[in-house]
Amino acid sequence: MRFSNTLLLLILCFLVITWTVRSVPPQPPVQCDQTGCTVSNTYGVWPNRTNCKAAKVAYPTTEEELIKAVAYASEHNLKVKTVTRFSGTIPKLACPSGSDAMLISTSKYNSAIEIEPDQLTVTADSGVSLRELIDKVEEAGFSLATSPYWEGMSIGGLVSTGSHGSSWSGRGGSVHDHVVGINLVVPATSSKGYAKVVSIEEGRDVKLSIEKAFKRSITYNFTSDVALEDMFMEHGKKFEFGDITWYPSRKTAVYRYDLRSPDDVSGNGVNDFIEKVLETSKSENGKCKTADTTLAYKKLTGNGLKNNGLFFTGYPVIGTQGKLQSSGSCLFTHLHLELISLARGTRDITVFHSMKRLRYSPFQEDSVVIDFNYYREDDALTPRLNQDVMEEMEQMEFVKHGAKPHWGKNRNVGFFGAKQKYGPNFEKFLEVKNKLDPKMMFSSEWSDEILFGRESSKYDGCALEGNCVCSEDRHCSPSKGYFWRQGLVYTQARVCRFSSAQV
Ligand SMILES: Cc1cc2nc3c(=O)[nH]c(=O)nc-3n(C[C@H](O)[C@H](O)[C@H](O)COP(=O)(O)OP(=O)(O)OC[C@H]3O[C@@H](n4cnc5c(N)ncnc54)[C@H](O)[C@@H]3O)c2cc1C
Image (tube, rainbow, N blue to C red):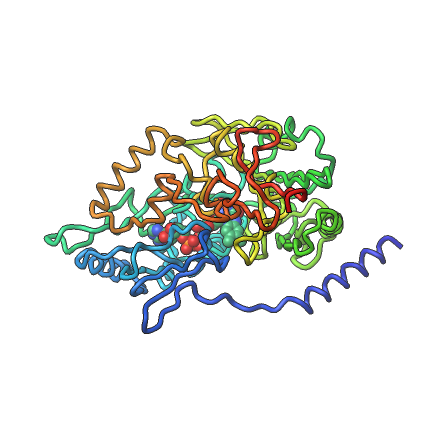
């Protein structure tokens, strides 16, 4: 009986998904017409909801063409930004300054993937997509030790923003910690032809270390969230690729038991992680009810794992690293905790539970990445559900505990005071940056704002979008009942809280 109900539900889900999902490839992020070019990101809106403009775009296919493009910009004193065919970044990092700027797209710079089996390395053009790289490496009998959970990004883009998977083992979960060589094309003097290649170790574009192909074995344990704050350290140490997803409203934690599996154990599992945003009702109760259904569905379907590539039939799900680490479905809505080791510049969290205590310590330690995935309204002035709670947690993380931002993900408030958080390494970074790009060709008002963590001028509703910390009611949404208030637990926080009494 239980089996037939499960089967029926699966068939229904399959039919609903087949009926509702239309596969429409996204538009290229750069669109040009007679007036110039516009760059958008994959989310369709930049944090400040303004457009990003440039005068022209170049599409190099080889390193020679790339050098020519940089030389042209350098000779003509143009501002430049690299754009990719994915543009998966939330901060406006890929946006150049001024409408006469030039874009260099890596969308056609993606032909070469060279594996050096003896050296256990792979070298790729920076426009190569993560999925293309994983497939090539696996075909040759190797695996990348780590990669982000989402495969729709370029190698250049993911390394530039410090993107990561989840691991405390070996070199850890950050892809840049597996980079063993990189070629940088930078501006040069006229005598050197206005552009040159700087090689950090040998390699064409991005060179990564690889390992002999391996398999993994994954089991999700949907259980109580009691003592989550005590268990996460042990969990990270015990499971090489472990992570924890926490559903506070359901008092549920989902522990991913994820380890290497012996090669001779059969299994052809894939990870097809699907989630949906359900926040339209604006009702907390409604959201909790849908969370129940979502959680039940995930439990039933192995959280997107498929034993044979088609269906989930039970744990453990065993498959190759290439099929289990990164997937191409959508990742949204929940709190996702990933364990990650950064070789340098790390932090650790000792406790996090119902906003009680969160602590990060700065260097040479294993760290925990906390993702809060949230809903963003089409209208900038519409607050989101539990706006104040999210803001309080954000300020608790970044201000009280000195968390470092994800360079491809955080809202602007996450970058305030970044300089202080990176200590002397920040100065070293600026030194190298100034040496490689003395005319600041690759800098923009957006990257400067983010890099130097400056809070730009405040405007009505700016706190709702994470573009400021509120210090007046108008930074929230008084017309919708959201006012400037102090935090409930972290009282130094300043948040936008709903007050029905004042509407
Ligand atoms: C659905 C989704 C899931 C995600 N999941 C994860 C995850 O699991 N883990 C994680 O860590 N991150 C994750 N991210 C964030 C993602 O890894 C970063 O946003 C990443 O930068 C996206 O790569 P991209 O190719 O789209 O780069 P873009 O967004 O196009 O570019 C990022 C930055 O890098 C610069 N850049 C790009 N290529 C080059 C180059 N060749 N040379 C110099 N500069 C360059 C750009 O100018 C820009 O500033 C996710 C993002 C999305 C949309």
